[in-house]
Image (cartoon, rainbow, N blue to C red; front, side, top):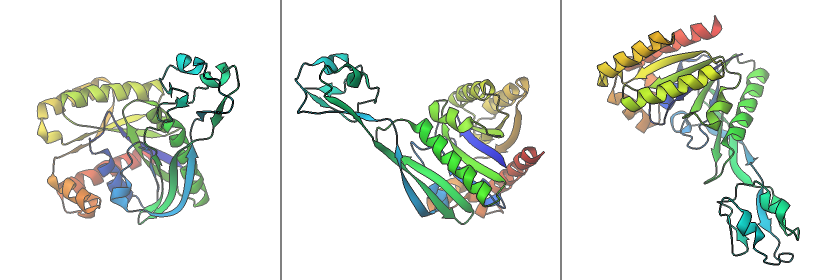
Length: 286
């Protein structure tokens, strides 16, 4: 089994559109959407949900009013400002348990908290595991680990040898969780100054965890000077550029229709994505 993870330094680089096209190009794959804070791969692949499960993150504190003597110690100690006037704001509570341990009357409990949901679905390109974290909920790294584990189980049970994952943007906890155990990370970047900055940060992250990395420059023709800067950087850092994709409004039109652009194979952008996928697949199985 081989695992390809597609990530980016920030959202909006076209990462999910590319994953959607990869899904259509792969003969057999399990798809995972690890962007649990803002999942949107389902908008392209129109999954039919087969299973829905609750996700429990960190426990949240709750005050037992019958035991509370209103001493105010919990409000004084809470570093997150979650305790006010003898009640706990569930959106601010981080579940650290400090108030639970400090309360002299044992009036604070830590209770299970449903932080989100995860799903197993069917798409026309293969099974898909995806999730939705609740508003203001935390622990996205744990949720990412959970759905990746399920995706591996499905791949083993159905004898599927490829997992393609739409990763979270940035360099935070969910990205680190998504990087664990993968075979190849594809970083999608854009030819902008912020794109170059974000690319370097993500490269540092993948290197830190010893993950083999390749780069795709999306919309490369919008600023060819910055594209040259990215190419020079990748050459200096010995990072393979597997694809350069033109800016084409057809990509946006396909997204608005809820279809991967690769379903129009005659387009130049589709041919570029196809070539890039074949390079990545060859690298994965070599």
